[in-house]
Image (cartoon, rainbow over all chains, first blue to last red; front, side):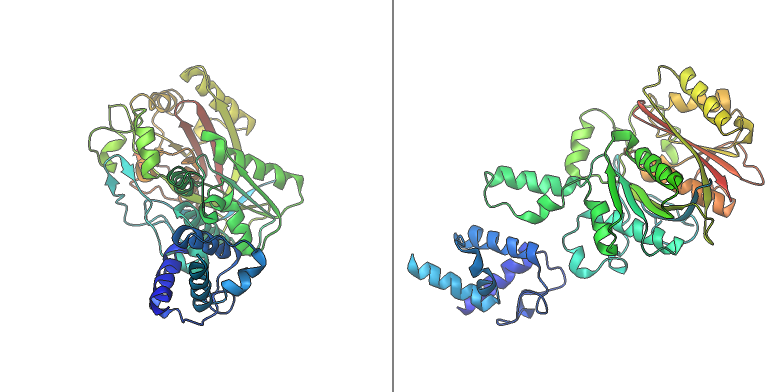
Length: 86
Length: 355
């Protein structure tokens, strides 16, 4: 899980071009949107593509989005759960 | 009704992204036949969270817009109007490359959203929370002039007080390589002091963004009055454009003698400069002539940089040595005529008067 979260942080920084943020500065449970990392709806679309490109995961139900993308940990848990199912 | 240029902002290959006069040090760094913008620290105008999605042309345009609003003391204009021929080329390239590489699958939204021609005007509006008229003109070598014409017409309707308008284009490695195939650029190395005297075909590729706040009242920092604008598409001969200039001046009840400085878009291309040679020698013999494309390079909206130079000349009353091409400047500079053409097809005249 730790390794996956570290990889996710680096991918988020790269995909979203977060110029002033270092991957290690993102907390595991830090909210990604609004008051946390300050991401917005366009970033949400970028994160969906990130999951597809890097983990071959398509989010079937858009209503799951807020829960999956709450933090790096929730993203990692979703990926792990999805990979276990496969 | 008079139209005043109440503020300007310019991002160019020179250190122009600051309030005040023409930069004291002028040393544009030619990279072969290419002249790149000297990027200022964009964080002084753009929030760090927004900057990460912006390509260079958006940053250039937003910075020029903010600078001109700052100078004019205007927070929210009544309209935002831009002109760009190439639009957001860099993001277009990113998006198209991804489409090909990823076989049209899993495309990310940012480069698509940012690749449209009206992104700069839209981004400025978003930053200012300005819901007023917002328009972008994409008309090749008349893109800036069309934006200017629209601004003039809106102001003449009398419903708007301040309009933010500008012209911007960026050069990317892709676009430079593509345009180079048409032999548009110099093959031999050249410097900015040599370019205007060149006798070979081709010019220097350039880029930049220049914005202006136009209004019907003379503000504290007003640079000049925008007295006239006209365009001519594919004039048949140099004699025809000379006749057009005489007619344009006559409409404004002046003659060539009244022009204190002629600023031309001379770009060092021996085939394109014949237009300027003819106009200078037949209509303005012995008069002061200035140039600007050795400082910004050639691009479809370069006339916006020419207008920015004209504003600086009128506000300071002096022609910078690097701008003066020939002739002797008069003691007082009250009227500046900017004659530019793009590729010999899109000719424009802008008349500025000191205020």
